Length: 146
Image 1: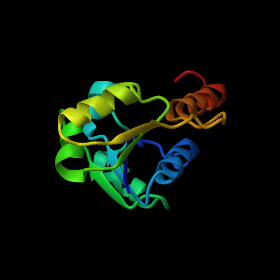
Image 2: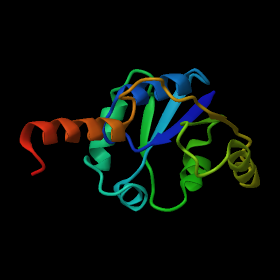
Image 3: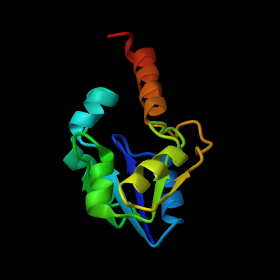
């Protein structure tokens, strides 16, 4: 069974490792779609690392079998046209679609896919924003608000 997981993966952290390990438990092959730079800019702001660098970092993670850089536009296109997974693993914070809505949209395109939502990792620094906030706090405490 082929599993797809998607994300930005700008600052790799334990939450990403947890997410990808949990996704891999749903099949034998894990394909990760790394959001391209244009998509990241539109959704979250300027990425710290380029999509090529982020994809390279993700490719070195143990549960990952293949990495694809996403296209600008509809994520479903790359899933339907190129990957054709059996399972899509959504992170707890990926709320663009509900699991049922995504399954329905893919079925309309001729792809019968199970969509699962994975649970959040319980840890204080399991998210990029939390890590950045802590770095900024430490920096401000040490150097002031430059």
